[in-house]
Structures are given as structure tokens and as C-alpha cells.
Image (cartoon, rainbow, N blue to C red; front, side):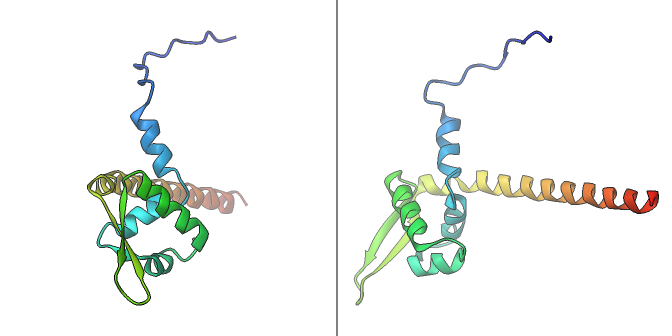
Length: 128
């Protein structure tokens, strides 16, 4: 039986900032919403069109949660009928480099996975 080695990494603080960020970004559709708001403010219907797979109920829930956490702002427009616009706060905009980095790693991972699948199918053809 192998001896369990002691972890040499410094223990995270009680309220780990990494866990805080990942709990926010790990929410369903949250990175997509932040991404869609990164260029300019969007109305609810525009966000639904930007992310067609999200339901109105989930989008509403995510927007409320992100507003409560200070990631985005909400503004009721004085139109008839009233419309609501959402945009990123300065804190929300700070997530963009992290989301962009995750996207870049995702592309590399996807390409590596496709390359392995291609090699696997070539081997199957060669051994057949």
C-alpha cells in the first residue's frame, strides 16, 4: 500500500478566493451571460436570442444572482412598455480575461481530443 504524501501546497484561506470565483463562474450559463454583456449592455430579449438554449426562468434567475453579487447592473428603461437593460459592472468586466483564458484552453483541449480520436481511427484502419 502506498504511503499518503503530505500536501506541500499552502492551504487556501478559510474563504478561498478561488472557490468564490469558481462558484460564480461554475453556475449554469453564467460565463455565457458575462460574455454576451462584455461588449455592450443588452436587454433581456437580446440575451435570450444570444443564448437560445437558456430558458427565460434560468436567465432571470442568473441575472438576479449576478446583480446581487455586483457582477452586473440592471436599469429599467423609461419606455412604454418598460424594458430592462443589463450591463457588466467593473467587477463583472474583470472576469473577461479569465473567461477568455478558459476558452483558449478549451480550444486546445478540443483540438487535442480530436487529434487523439483521429489517430485512434487511423490505427483501427491500419490494423483492420
